[in-house]
Structures are given as structure tokens and as C-alpha cells.
Length: 364
Image (cartoon, rainbow, N blue to C red; front, side, top):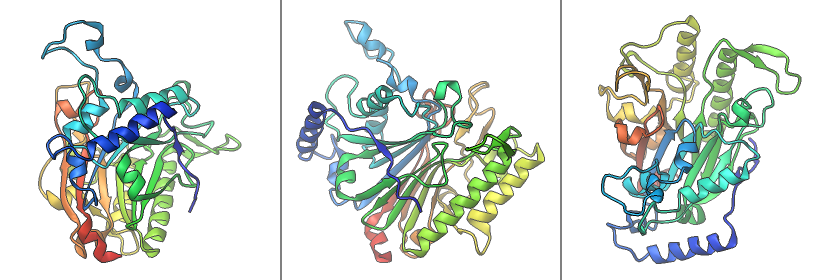
């Protein structure tokens, strides 16, 4: 297990002072204006996950800034801060496919500003920090001028300061696909952007030699993820794996039908289900949404090239260690926010879970 720290962009001194002041000021706000601080012990943990298909649209200035008089129907750019407010200031927001170049410090700082700056009037919300894991592989993850793949986790500052003990990457990922948060309550919170299986070549990161296809890389990713997760569980960690796993599990998870061509996609699906759900020596994780909604058809990837819901799949998940569900009954709620508003400029919609951390304490 790697102890490599994830990259954190610290705000400049003035910004840090403002964030600290904001944290102090908002601690006295009522529940309606700042729902997050109504639970200072974080007895209810709310986690959101969203493949945003590029951070750039969320960093553009609002169209309102170009007009002197604002109106109720004025057009605004997508806003991460507004998203956080609309969903009552969750402790964690995992973002996948942020498409930020590893060396682009200015964009990283812009993301930090975007999650902390209200669009217009003060929103009395809490401050947030952002941690990144971005590609370093010189053969994969460097397309589009280096702006490809990558994950970022937005962490509410009070949760980061009082609960989080470490934010790290993993030794077996150099494509910006995995970021892990570890807490003082033995939770291991993962942000995952899994490999998408294709027939494109998979190259050795050192020599560039072709060693297989991206289908092979996907299966390798599954195996390494499984190995580290099982190791963590044996050490007493309880896992919450969130993100875009790039595979739909069952016929109910695809519309108008589950993808069956080429054949390798079927094999990738079988491998995923066996390793993480079905095999006795696998992870035996709980698919939170399907656990709470056994027959409900909802999807997380929705084509932007067709009419709304004309083509869609459930490929994003929040998976839980089985003991979190069966022993401590920690899972309270699991949702997919399948609306055009929540999809925003992406081709994925967010999903979320709520966990009762008082019950999780029974496992410690």
C-alpha cells in the first residue's frame, strides 16, 4: 500500500484567512443556512460522486458578471459551489475525469476558488479543500495536451481537519484514477475513475512497448483494486468505493439494452461482478443503490447526442464493505440524481449515499 500523499493546493494566506473566518462564522449559522454544521460530530456522513467530464465549464465566469442588472432568469455558468449548496453541503464530493494537466497550478487554484466562492450573494456555507490525483504516465493520460483523466475530491474543511487522517494515492496507478481518504473512524473513502476497456494498445509505462489492450488494462485495474481493498479490510478498514467504474452490471442497468458487443465487454462485466460481488474470495461488496432500490431503473451515464434518456447506463457506483451494511446497518440512503439540472454540462449524473456514523462505531 502506497503512502504517497495526494497533491493539495493550499490557498494563499489571504484566502486561508478568509476560509478560517468563514468556518468560524458559519459555525453559528442555523440549520437552514448551513446544514453541514448542524452535525459537528459528523454522525451523518454524506458522500457524492460525479464524473463531470471536464472541470473547465465549472471554472468559467458566470454570464451574469457581464451584465449590470441581474434577473431571475439570467444565464449562469455551471457552479460547483451552487451544487454543494443545493445538496446541503455534503462532507465529500468525489469528481472524476476532471481533465486537468498535472503541472497546471493555475487551474487547480481555480478549482479551489470555484468550490468556495458564492456565485452572487454570500451563501453562509462552509469552506472546502480540494485534493487531486492527476496522470503522470507519459503514454496514457496525456492526450488533449495533458488534460485527460484525473480525479479530484472536494472535502468540507471541518471534516478534513477533524476526521481525515490522510489523503493518498496508490502505488499501482499512474493515470490519475484513484484517490483515497482515510479517517479516524477506520473509514477508507475511495474516489475511482476505472479504466474503460477498448481495443486500443496498453503500453508499458517505462518502455512504451505494447503489452496488451486497454481491455487487459481494465482487468489488471480490477485485480489491483481488489487486492488492496481486501488487504485494507483485513487491517480493519471499512471501505466506501465511489466513482465511475465504467461497466454496467446487469440488464436492468442499461437502456435500451445492456451492451454485449464486442465480446470483451461481456468478459469485463463478468470479471467485475465476480471480483467485487459474487466470488466467495472476492470483495463481496454491497452496491448501495441496488441494495436500497432492488428494481428501480436509474442510470448515471446519459448520452448527450440523443434525446434525454434515449441511451443510458448505470456505470457509476458507491460500493460499501459488506459489514457496514449487514453488521452495523450504516447505510441510510442511496440515490442517483437523474435530472438534467444535476447532469449539468457532463454526460454523467451524480450519485450519493448517506451513512449513519454512530452505527459504524460498532465495528471499531
